[in-house]
Length: 501
Image (cartoon, rainbow, N blue to C red; front, side, top):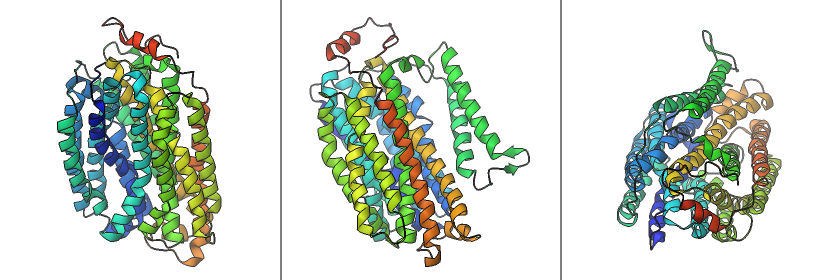
């Protein structure tokens, strides 16, 4: 562990870039109808703008965490920030949907280089008993960014055009680079080998699985071309991922995922829980903003402002939650957060009719902010509490990867569910019409479209219940003195290999 005298300036510098890349995970949701109109595309294609970013973000995280260990988190963070900023400019200049999807994939790669470094630096420069407030800031940043993204997006889309949700990253990226260059310390590096086979297996598995799920309804869950079917892609993706896990278990060198980390009960449970959180945050915004804009006729800014209570409550409460988890068992805080999140999403689903007074949606929005503030910090603190300095990069990489995999699967699953529910709830032939419209729908289509969006919102509401089941099984946090003792284990002895708490 490399405790530094003044770690907070370094953390604030990293938080700015972290905030920017997480905003980009959700900022596109509110702009989707305008992107459809501007680039003359449909719902399924425009959802790929989000999925491509999330997929390119998720796949390399296991490698970039290790690269941060090898070359230093500061160097890799700055490289990723440069890639992300330039790709943002490319996104804004894109003239067709294919070019935008490609630019978003490159942007996701830059984000993947940055994200593990923030968590690894926290683990390495803060003492275990001081990480609660630091993780509280990290959690507040994650929660607020993913909720503020749509609000910022709405203002930019209405005021300047959809391109500006990407252009705005350029000046922010320059400032974040200057701050990180000056304030983030250079930390000790650890040499690593790289598992190329693991990279190929995990990348192929995720790509096939996500493509199969998201495009399933497009091909009626049948034949894509010749013998190639949607289900063959999904099954092949699962097999590749199983082969990846098997290879990690037998790899005698340095596997991408150190499976012994999952012997730590809380690390395993926190990873499953954060997957459900990533899934739900991504999945909930798509049907909600389509409903606000296509059924209720709200502008992007007006629909984004419906999330103001959520952002306010999350931002105000998250720092207090960060301090609370140092003195209260995190499982009780996180369990309450997950249950409240499920209630707020189910409440939102119930309200999604053409006649509901629009102000009523502010109530579950506020509840969602309270819920999310109680989830981010307890999960991140619990996941990283027992990780030693040599495991910081690997542990952060795994944790962030599982969150992003949840987001990718959430984006793909909600796209498939929206398409299926539109086909089931709307008159014959009108589902395709609705899927291609960027402005308010004809009033005759409001009821069916609203019902389809309402039903789709129940998917993230159900997913977070799995997260609640995971966190209630957290083991009691270990004393700080025990963690300090493990940090002084002899060099060469694998840390955490036998930890069961």
